[in-house]
Image (cartoon, rainbow, N blue to C red; front, side, top):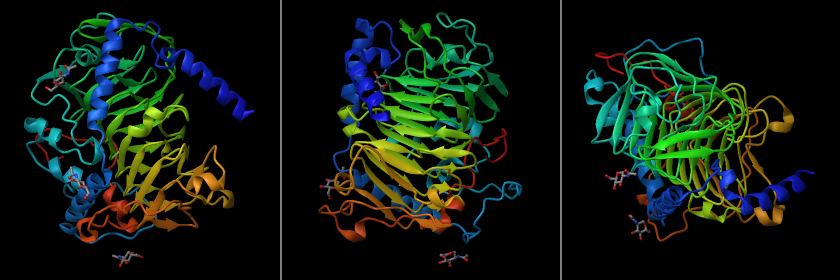
Length: 439
Ligand SMILES: *[C@@H]1O[C@H](CO)[C@@H](O)[C@H](O)[C@H]1NC(C)=O
Ligand SMILES: *[C@@H]1O[C@H](CO)[C@@H](O)[C@H](O)[C@H]1NC(C)=O
Ligand SMILES: *[C@@H]1O[C@H](CO)[C@@H](O)[C@H](O)[C@H]1NC(C)=O
């Protein structure tokens, strides 16, 4: 039954790709956007991904060595809120956090991404735009002061928020290229409406906001650029959807409950880093590659680092197809079915994560393979190094080791071991930054 539905969907996707893309009318403007985005994606793809992972590993080591001892607690103390001095526990955070003048120096964040999305600088060099209005009433001509107005402006723009606000998006928020959404200093919650979409775009940073309870919406006319309005079909209800886009950095986002996925990265997207996020209460958490026929996802390269996969999560953390996914130093404290899965021969390098299996004896396995016989998947490279397995968690490895390249061993710094994952991810999710106080 599952197989039949799947085949049907594939055929459907090939005949009407635009429907799948949420586009009801694929005009010349969008065709050009798609073409440019694809060229940038090809250019952003790294033929030797090992270099990027090696660099990140080295930085993690540096950050950890500079800090005090690691706690070995097996549980995350949800009740013990941290009250000590500002602590940056991983190299991404160490690049900008714990400085008093962070609010005067917001652009500093632009240089802090690491891993595959490290070239994302977002709105660096652009103006600062302040969201003052939480409404979202006009999708075609959004009112100045709204978030939607900011994300469709021409050129680079750094979007911040005047005060805390709850934004209920009437339809998907279509972010254009060269933008940063920077929620630091305000408690910004996007909830009870549509989610965020990046489609055919390049260079976006989304940082420091909360996204929850995202719904599928009907679509219709939505502005997606200063000079363009798209006719959209129904949105799936993803919290964050990255479609045919590259150089995207998603950092310190708290995510829970969406009608579809929490984060989808699909359709030939690449150069993406997802870091410091706190994810809870959801079934299909992260989907990288939507379809076994989408071979364009071979260029997909994604870093998933320092995230906390927390309470109420079920599966897909992430679920991968074709590409290369570096899963580094995340803390997996809850899953109901499995943590990392995939089909269509993705390459997965899992390093220094902590995996705490659920009590259910049938769900101890971290890994899960779909649509392949053991004979087929035994060739897929899914490798685990320095991961910490607790409560019976087990990672079934396959394929040859990932670094078999002309690569001197000593060059490749070791990731931090899994027992440090708690510490590295301790401040995941949106931070409560206050102007004038180290954040
Ligand atoms: C934490 O656990 C690791 C691995 O079990 C061990 O090597 C390390 O010494 C422990 N650290 C502390 C501070 O207890
Ligand atoms: C984004 O910024 C880059 C670098 O400045 C520029 O080349 C590109 O045209 C911009 N993209 C858009 C869609 O404005
Ligand atoms: C990546 O590593 C390979 C293998 O050692 C090397 O040939 C290549 O020049 C490196 N690329 C970069 C961008 O450092």
